View 1 (cartoon, helix red, strand yellow):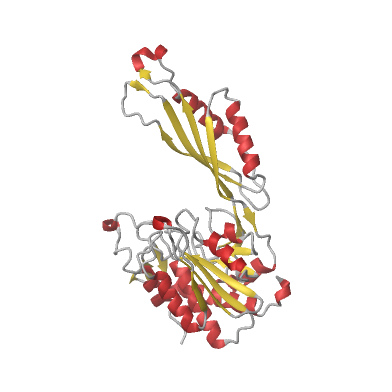
View 2 (cartoon, helix red, strand yellow):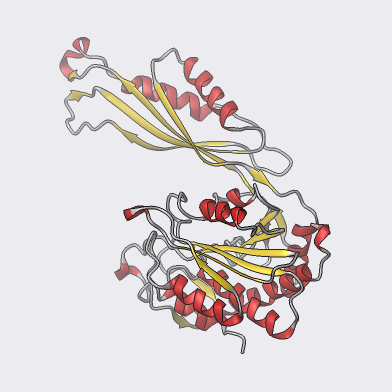
Length: 384
């Protein structure tokens, strides 16, 4: 018998799988998938406290190979006493399922599992269906999807197309399909001076006015006006630190952290070069360290995105817009291997206290995912 999406979602939510712990979530998934005939592979990567669980499961050996990617890890619940119900109780009230991960993204994982069970019960599988489930999406994303993909390549499991079940809709089901994401560059800007007494400023060198001047320059710079598929590049200062707790002491150093979300006009090299030019123009000494935390990617609208769009419209009556906004996701890793788009539930309450998902939406997700599986499985392999 096909599984029930609400029961599966409740079981997954009841596993307090805050990154990097899994607490039985992937074991439960593997049991359900194994009963459907999937060949399951538990793939832990990392050592010690950085070790995280991952799961790859596949049924079928032929093309087209359709992969669903998701994660079972969740962010911490925050103040538990502020939740309407305990964050891992998976309580339902008035048609709403409350719990950490209900939207991001155990609800989607449950929905695709149920969709696969319904399709396999009613139809003969022509191609392949697989699950790429990580426990490292909400964390550093070092020992999760990126390493599972390497394992998949080594073992001939690279799919023809992939759907990431991240919650993609701002307000209601059927609004958006993500076809790409902006890149993400983290920066640490440091300045050094000479510590001293505020009353003897001539004997010290305060680095903070220089830091403020440089941050003003970065904040004022217009990187671009956006591109055909992406919004404008944007820089946000996220942290300031002097390690100085005395009001009458000029600090020796200051540090700022910032993040740049950039579109397809840029890459890490060109963006870093531009940041240096902006800072050099202030004529202040500084040290800048940058880290690429996510590359920009785009799956151009075409057969795969149209299949997802058609399935969403058939169930919701809405034609979702192809968008690239929002934060990063593991689709940035998958995009190097095959066409990938993102569609899932409503993201209005993700990472919040009282995160929730409507029961009706989860049942509609099952129908949408089942339709996507059906269309994809009956599409000629060479089309992708």
